[in-house]
Length: 193
Image 1 (cartoon, one colour):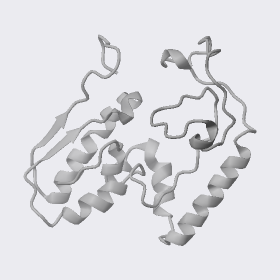
Image 2: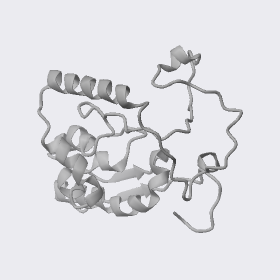
Image 3: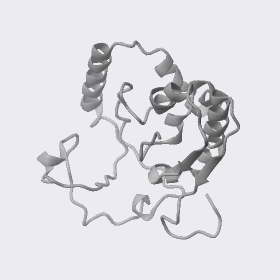
């Protein structure tokens, strides 16, 4: 059995299949051109985080609020929210031992992603956990949609057929693939999406 909770579907799909979806080509190119040297990767990530940290305060902008939750709407009253100077470790910001979510209302640059040993990188879990199992027989698969991608429901519609087809091709078998759909998680909607 192979499982890893809280990961995105693209981590479980091969580069060949994922490359058919334009939204993932940029990430796949970065991964494909990656030098496989752990020390160089760690140093490259450290430098990227350092540069990101220096530039974080320079960018000012607004949040795109189309079809988003109440707390991201421009007219949401956040006067009761505490302020925090970023970047900072949560422990240094008075949240020692805190285990939960902290929401910020500021548009910031994307934090550099470490590409090695990261289960959220596209194809990572497919290559590390599934590809080595291909020589062995498989009776079937069960896929549970995690809450980690509820904001990407439309993209999920395009992504879901990929592991199904991908895995059946890899194992040269048309084995059963069961999908456990995400249960009601947020406010009920009459229409999906």
